[in-house]
Structures are given as C-alpha cells and as structure tokens.
Length: 331
Ligand SMILES: [Zn+2]
Image (cartoon, rainbow, N blue to C red):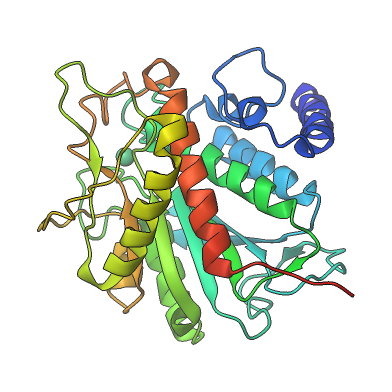
C-alpha cells in the first residue's frame, strides 16, 4: 500500500503541474510507462468489496482532492444482499466555494448544494466478478478516464461561475453477481435513485448522461458501433451532441453518433434506468451493437482505441461546458 501511495503522490503532482498545458495526450494515452495517463491507472479488476475496488475509489478521491479547484467528494456506502457497496459522488457547485476543508461529507446530509440544478455525468466502476482477471477496459475503465479528464479540464475554469452544478457519479455494483435480473444488477444506481427521490433531489437533476462500453476498437467485420438517440425526450440534447461532433469531425475524423436519428426501439438495462423510471431525463452514451468482446476476457486495454476515447472526451467536454453555461465574471 505504501508504494501505491508514493506512486499516486508523484502522479498527482505531475497531473497538477501539467494541467495548465491541457494536453489531452498527456492524460489520455495507453502508454504503460506514462506517469500522467488517467487510463492505465484503471487497468485492474475492480470487483465489489475487493482491495482493488477500494484502491479505485482512493485514486478517484485523491484525484478530485488535488484538482486546481476543489470538488465536493461524497462516498455513499450502503449494504444490499450481503455486500457492501460504495458509490462516489463528486460535485462542482454552480458557485465557487473555497472552504471545502473537509471534502468528504457524510451522505446524504450535506447533499443539497445551492439552488441550481444538476448536470450528472455517470459511469460504473465495478467489474464482473465471475470472469477471473476481467479488467473491463470498455466496461468501464475508459469511461472513468474520460470523466476524470473532463473534470480536470473544467477545473481549469476556476474563475468562472456556472448556472448548474456538475456532478460526476461513479456507481458501484452495476454488474450482476449471478444471472442479470432486476434484483441482481444496478445496485449502486438503484440505491442512489431511491435516496435522491426520498430527499426530493431527483427533481433537481436536469440531465443524466450515462457512459458505458465506450472506447473499444471497431470490429474487424466493419460492423459500425453507433451511439444512437435512445430516448425521444432527450432528442434536443442528442442534436447538440451531434452538432458538436460535426464541428470536431475535421480534426478527429471520427463519427460515432447517428445523424439520421434512427428510431431505435430497444431497452438497454443500465444505470440510467432507476433514474429514468423516476422521470429523470437521460442520455445513454453506449454503442450498438455492443463490441464483440463485451463481457469476455478480451475486454482489455489491447482492445481500446485511444483516438475514439479522445474524440468522445472532446465532444462530451464541449457539451458539458455548454450545458452548465460557464460565464466569465469580472470583478
Ligand atoms: Zn458490464
């Protein structure tokens, strides 16, 4: 554990010093020797209740505590079916607040922050337990790294006010322990949606964007993996994402969204479902068909495409900034 701590200490010093350069390649790369990669940090199993699960939470918590601007970090621990689960909720409030000396708050006492509503970007960090050594590169290490990168970029805008709170949620227990069912899956999101509902916070969520199965190499059989517009109620948001993707296409030459806005009538069970059932507007960033190596031991870092990961990060960063409507203040 000591060597891990020393390693992370060094890593974050590098991250913070380098952050002013804002070079995406420093943070999103697959070089195992990189000291700044936010991706390779998560090249490990992250099964519920394991040391690696705790380590993952520690890495993410330390990352936010060392940001140029302070985020509120809340660990939400609960028990279900004999397991302990830990969600992590980090919040950048709509106003600047520099008195977060104690950044780990008890849940849910200190949850209400200001008056603004939330934009939530969410991901699950756990991995399937029944495939030994399964590291879940697309499921969902790449998405975790994308959200950390976006957080870091947004933290650079420390002199700006926002109209919305930006929340990043890292769910535990998305995967089933046995056969996927309503009661054996989505443990973290089901519990958090329930608590938000009980505390009247569910109506404060303007939009939840869920990332899953992103960043994989495209199939050799040239089947295109497309992120569709799954929900009619968030078509306007999908259009904004499309327009941003269009703008950056010239530099990335990547297009993952569906300009035809095809009518996809398919139910995908994932962490957005408990929130959507309670009326929360959701955008589900997940490709169809799922990559062929989904839920196999081949879901490893060899099967990630760094250009796709950088592309998604750029699109979602622009979208998020626009959504929370950063406004420069001059005093
Ligand atoms: Zn999965």
